[in-house]
Length: 233
Image 1 (tube, rainbow, N blue to C red):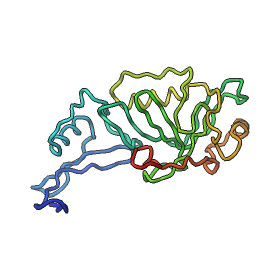
Image 2 (tube, helix red, strand yellow; image 1 turned 45 degrees about the vertical axis):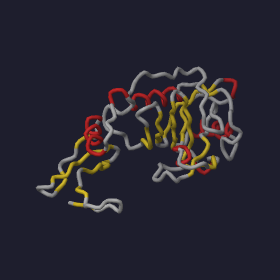
Image 3 (cartoon, helix red, strand yellow; image 1 turned 135 degrees about the vertical axis):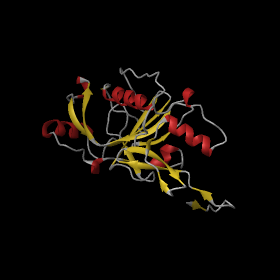
Image 4 (tube, rainbow, N blue to C red; image 1 turned 30 degrees about the vertical axis):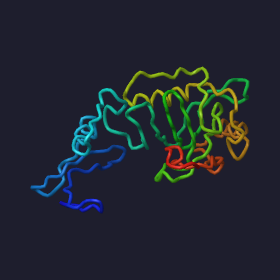
């Protein structure tokens, strides 16, 4: 199979494709003799290494960079190998939220919306999404949590947040665990929701709904692209 690119004088032969299956990614190389794709292989560091050797004049040494020890999860939007920086999302779910007694909200299990996370060095930021993202042009919303500023930056408070791991799977897990293990102590954003945050949480503690009411999320006037650095909004 050959493909012609607008900036290429000669036809380019198909070498491989990367395909998504459920929440996993796989690599298929192309058999030109049989003119078909071979069976898929897990998209591991070794596979990425071979891809880069084929497609780039510069070889990235994955042994000294941040990456994934196995398959790249489908919820990862962007990551960097030369520094600890990754953007990912998590589905709406129920989580245990810890509140200081002084805020007047009881610790318990609450629904949380789809969340957009950004970890850069050891700085964690979080926003909300109305649905699981299908495009990076989608709007983002303020995360409905105490300890989170209008810019999305999280004050981790008493939570321990450190990881020496170079594996992003472990890094993401540590970040999420640290966030939800931190006591929410104060409001750092006057626009948490369209309605009163404390009143909604008290209602949720009593009624125990399965999902977060996304219609109450407050717009952050940004898109996922702006978090990725692709626009200035």
